Image (cartoon, rainbow, N blue to C red):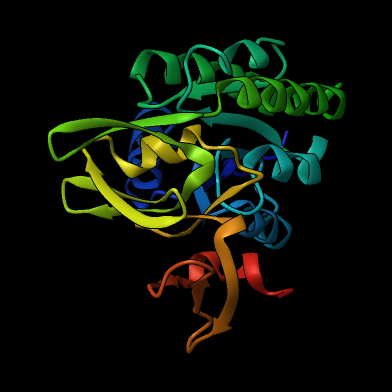
Length: 260
């Protein structure tokens, strides 16, 4: 066994959650060195290739390349731990024993159990033997469960009435202080409403093949996009088909439109 300390990568699109996990790991596994952090799956793959950490903590739901897709690339070259916000349907897909998972918010007792298993595997240099097969099974399960759980309607108060807004009519969703602004088409005409459900919670339940997060505060219906123009510093601007409003694309999500 090498005398060096184990190393790790943390991938999550939320900076505060990355920092919280890093602090928790410092308590649960003091000798573990966090050598890289990533904001999305693409960065996770790049950081892995550059630093080759022993352990990768991968958020399942990330913009662009997901944690599962990043894991496909990494394979058996590292010990994998998936981090998920879903503690009902998705967790069942992780219960293979060889692939570990953590549920947000990460609980100290669960993290301690995970660290115990990781330490044993690191000491024996034994990543999951069937990691590739298990990752494919996990991806298939998440696709199936994600499609079943995808949001179809959003309920919103508009004046004195409660509207049931069909998700396929939504052009975009945007954080607005303590609310989320829903912009949709009501019989072809632009309409808007504010709801209290956080954007992050809504984004996790939208069909990822039709909606994309393009900014920390913006999720857009890909079918509502007319064209995208490049901006400065690797940013971009989205022009919609049925609206004058232009949506920002931050550097973190600009890779989604590089081929346009």
